[in-house]
Image (cartoon, rainbow over all chains, first blue to last red; front, side):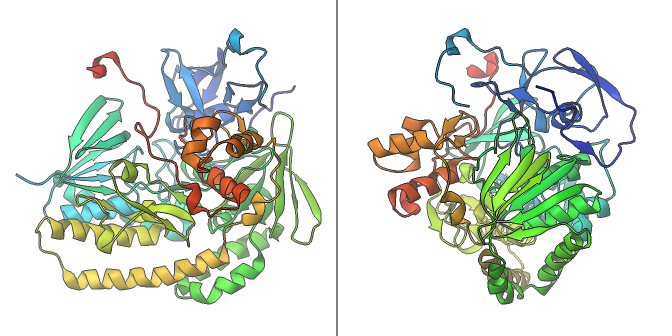
Length: 109
Length: 454
């Protein structure tokens, strides 16, 4: 499968100098003022792995209600990408190591 | 000592109420999940992403700026807590969680002004990356200056649909189609009632003109909605009211079907609810002046029933006066009469709006059994029906226990109303008998630190 290069499309440029952050070890550029959901979806087609299938998720409500855009930061904390501002040097993890015990269970995709 | 007055939510209702209370010299604590005042409707972008108000809020720029600025003169009286979640209400106390930690805040009077969230009705493909609510599509543009995709299809059953479509077009985004699932005849039916607020109707016609100007096709009465794509959105298909099949290529979809009130805190505060047939949802009973069945608890704005930003501002003002009155502070009765009169006009307008955008029952007609109903837990519609056929009563709380629909991290905010509609349809019973999901603390997921567990 070819990863979509970006989901969001920038319509208005931000003035500030870019910063760098990383998603799953890959260094990416962002602008101060971008929320993580924006920063991630300007560089790829999804935000995280869905826990129960091979499907991906990219958030849904953008207002902290649906809880569909959770990502993990390098300190182990879990945050909503839609209400967390990107910071210089931030390391974001989005993959989900599927528990071996889940293998073989009914696929709900 | 001053009474402890707490307002939850810094949208138009919460901000206006806070200003009115502080304006009488009474200290207020204003708690908000957002980082800046304005709520979702007048949401302010984070520092770095700001743009001129006219670009962000269009014809509503002056109102937005007024709401953003109206607390400044009362700074000394307002204890403002941004980026703070109220996750429980219990025995006259609120439980707060912020980056700074946890805290309990007692209250003598509590105003809940927690707004609303998009009403979701699932359809095949709605969990694919690239499908968002209309609210999300708007926030992406307003708060971040981005569109949800390069070629966007917008789908809805409410005034947010033409608004978001016109905002996207003005910003230079490509909108492939605007799909209103309610019939065009409904707009005609609701027109005269809506004309009780001619300025609002004119604004709405302006949005439609913008869409027409860009030659974007608009469809009414659509059914059998589906997003197609293997890993991402690739196209959107539907059937027109005449039975013709349509498909358009796109890489993003913004879809939701009206709004639903955020009522969890009112529920936890012990307020009684009743079913509102016009808005087709359970709402906290709000008597005169926003007073609930709990003596110390009040509601205002969209969390008390969908009315929009203008109504929210008026209600904030009105309910602030109820609180002041109940605290024995004298209020300006004449001004109150004016506010009440304006609210009555809006109530007639709202009835027209609900006629123009009726609940789209037909979307529930042909839902396939393998449709994913609960996106948190990945539970399919067929599973809910299977479980419901074996267990009773046929209400959302009972079926949540057996099916897990509504038990995920969103606590049923996304799927709860659709689950109730489906249960009522499946059993041929009234929508009221399907009940409403009980609010549970914490109202949103929170992380506890070791020290807070004492």
